[in-house]
Length: 247
Ligand code: IPD
Ligand code: CA
Image (cartoon, rainbow, N blue to C red):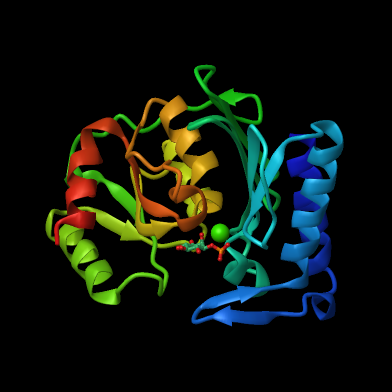
């Protein structure tokens, strides 16, 4: 947890001097900054010292094997970060076998540290989290994420279905923080047709430990190739899931 906080502080320090950001384009609507690489380095140095022998999978390229695997998104919501939109986070998950044992998401702009341990609940700082208890789509607010890794028409169809059902649909630009907000009951669900493991795993554990329902994500391939992601308040999960993949 101290590592996530320090990582967030390092990322934030780059915002004080935008000339250090060194924004580069990885692909369509996919950017990277000097901060992403520096933060991933810091996290790995800290964890490798504390847990020698563990492996790493990081968005900025870290790949090593170990029985225990740390899955790291140094800055999730990089497009927001690079524009100084204060909605981005650091996301770290610990995977042992096929189980996610630990998930930590740090939102440095709000000093909110979300954490979950399998079978031990989900917290924001010291406060226990529970997902929303809403059952009525007409009052629901979902975040539906999009990236050009999937097709825009399917995204449009998903949003249209939800709107026609009476739900509200938002997109804030950080999947990990969106999932943390589902755990906190601020959003009733989060869905995206493709997320990488570093975007999704910590947040999915937070949602399930906060009493939410999450779709199956982790398989051997999903660790590097990613998967479809759905997480919601239990009563609203079926509607969100079928809106997302109903075509
Ligand atoms: C992206 C964000 C975005 C989601 C994309 C992700 P990045 O990660 O989580 O909200 O919709 O699918 O790739 O590039 O900001 O680390
Ligand atoms: Ca990400």
